[in-house]
Image 1: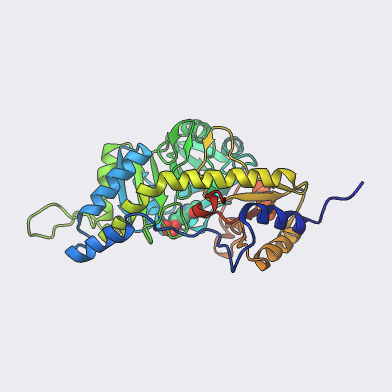
Image 2: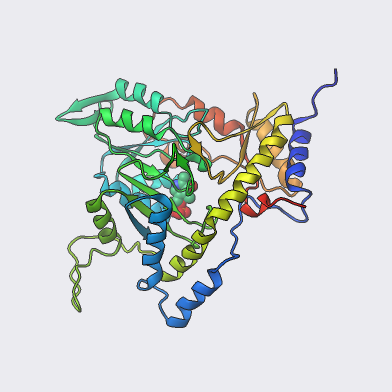
Length: 394
Ligand SMILES: *Cc1c(COP(=O)(O)O)cnc(C)c1O
């Protein structure tokens, strides 16, 4: 019996089967501007409406509402700002704890800290890579006292004010089960859907299940506004507050400057919203191309005995924002070797984020057991995933 080829050979032959041989480097995720981007941005410059006033912000918010099904959408400066305001809308106050997956981008935890609150890290599950609602239920049962109707971490004495599930790499986590678990303690759910524009869970768009949801339009996301984000909610009062809080809390008046709260200047400039309108027009094509690319990776990695394609979990109609593989039975050392081989051959591949609880800035924060996240992080590699790579080569 011939032994299987070395892991780096398995990886490189699958990558070249899907992507061909790179001339230069094939990036991890590159934006594409093939539609009305130039025309809309030029219209901003031609009319002088580049900043906080102009028609594209309203237009972008309307189109986002259509795409996601959220009743209210507020465009903001970036996804981190969206999370910060979403958490504030959910009632998070300084000194509270907020449950956050340790397997996430740093923005999720930073937003909690920006409010003076404390991230409390919880584990992911294998099947979705998102927060594990059942492990969370066990953890809450072990640590929560309900005092005066409020869930309190009995180890720290602090209130648990929110939970922030994240749909990792565009795959939906089990948001309905999470809503049940959080509902037992009346903990508000703020969904970090930064990576999952275009992904639905059982037919409903991610980011619209929780009390509030957030999106990001950073340069590496499925659509980009250069930098940008959005707050989604179905609650009219929260929608109104989201707009008010992100636009300096100014009361409408023809000439006076009356502000009724200390608020934020987090609005999305018209210039960026113009780019966003054009990008949203391309979203259906991006989704089709990204799903086609994922299908080709799925086929290529069906033949690699040591590497497994990370597929969409049950119930998730994924956008496949970032494709990923797992090294079967592998750890960090194999991962580093494979990353060196792939990047050396011109395929830009990346590991998952360093887990939040391992960052020095968060090392003192409370946490649950995180064994699954550690296993995932040690064995996961993200693959080049730009939409254009999904266009079938003739
Ligand atoms: C991109 C991203 C954000 C938001 O990032 P910004 O760069 O501030 O727009 C938040 N959470 C996750 C998981 C992300 O991937």
